Image (cartoon, rainbow, N blue to C red; front, side, top):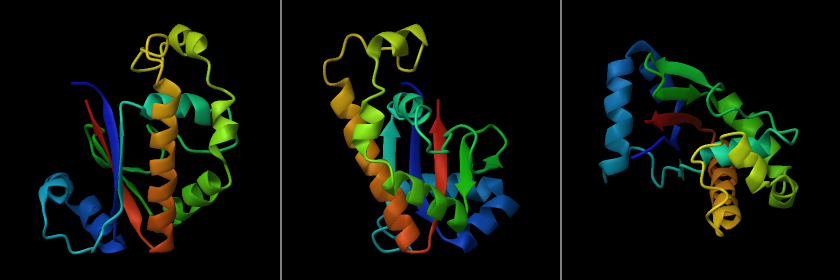
Length: 160
């Protein structure tokens, strides 16, 4: 197992209901990943898997103001479900679209990432780590861009 972050797009109505009824939200978001009966056709989603902390390390070195564990608004008290308003999604999308992967990649430093104890602490042993981060970043940019273009907010789940 491990610590995972994933995003799925959400309507304003879904986010409003989630704030009022966190129990509903927790179950609803879980069901979205397993259901073929989604009220939003082709709902955007992005699974950062364990790459989230490596991406955070790289993002922290740029002017992108995105902190996975601090942004959005708390829905479930245990810190496992957060919401991002439509405005939040638009802001993140704009920043990510303006930040090419190459700007992040220049800050990739496996030795420092291990020294800084960046999760999952395998940067020095996996030759494909940089490509893994790149594909995850591409997925993140696509998720926020598509969600913003469609006027959607987002749920962020943190599993540990």
